[in-house]
Image 1 (tube, rainbow, N blue to C red):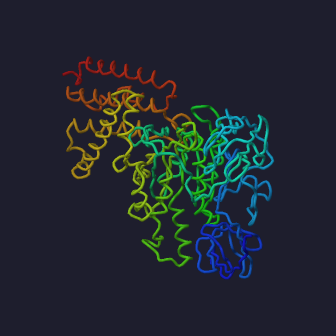
Image 2 (cartoon, one colour):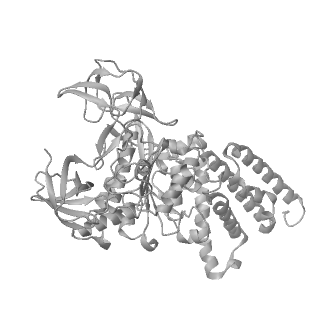
Length: 594
């Protein structure tokens, strides 16, 4: 029987209760007369320290605390995709229908609709067969893009005693009965899993396929592998949230989990407004048919913000176990770390650097290390992945602060946002000189097979050109542009074309918002061929202003607005025009002749 304690102290979201004999760490409890959800985070003798996931104003000492005997868990099953949850997986749309637009304390609604029936189709499993954890018992068409696989929960194995026939069932009805060593166990489509415990898998695999994002600077220069870990740090106004929105919209994943932990409400509202209207470029279906949103904005309870990223990663792991590629976006881990700092302060723990708890680095590691490409549980081999991208909001764009520094020790892709680029209206404001990807070497073979053997040389030449431009800009800042030779001016103009015609990308343009990797290849090839011809022409005495006056320069600038399916054709036509216009320039008999 679960015990009942009494509140003796309240400090914001932290409550201390006595008479809590037998309480366990991270046990879910119901606090006060309104039975607000909370979690045990400290135990001393018969006293328990609890973080409450809702506002505690009006609560008083003497109210009861009821133990549940279970850890904070998420409910997993058909009906998750397309939902909008808060940090502890309460369905916000269902709560709005029940109590209106203003959230009330103590409202409890199941995460998955208990009454809705789902069409269940049994897998190739017969009565009497032995099944193990992770084996698929049947499938449910959850959305047009997601076929939900009903699996044997981790830690369970046995012989199939009964299996439901094809038909419609609720998530609470038994769809199978297993004969285990402990006796008969009924299995439903819904299962629970503690959020702070990573779901098990067979083995971790190397990442050899890129997570294509539709963003040229990322896919070309700083790619991320499926199952990878990445971070987007940047100061206020540099475009972190828009960047995460872009990744969530266009990432080459079967499932997207977007966690808004501590960000402004209007930014989450934009997600809720835009996503239902957008189409997946690969399938033409609405993006929400493969997206799960977890909203815990800055004005929502601070303790639930701390739990929100665990809720998100656990849901992601569940779909990974089905063999899907999952991408999780966390916006932002800085706000999550601030929640840790506030709760740590109320617990009177010894503060670390800048007041953050001493365990900040280990908590960040626990989160990011749950990413990966793995062989999942089950008798039939299946491979799934979960990729994690976290935004970091360092105060004053100071990348030396603890959250950014501890994140950099863990992640393998760093997309650093530059305030100077953002002020020049260059978006995405990813600084190509400070950003890096440690995945490129393992992905190089994929790029060569997909695009051609010249891909690596094109990428290397473009990065080299941008690096040379930065070195020449130092000279320009010191002695002025007149000190540059014609060949150096060619480098500046070539790098400018890469920056403005290739790297700049509009998140709100219907065509430029998404760019396939094939289109990236053709665009970069055209720009670098123009640079080579411009360099050759300059060596023959042609003035740079005459070269830049060629009509093809404007056509290259407009390549980013060419639809993806026409990119190859238009780029080849542009290349042919380039050859013709340079020949005409040489034949004109003016300065352009050698």
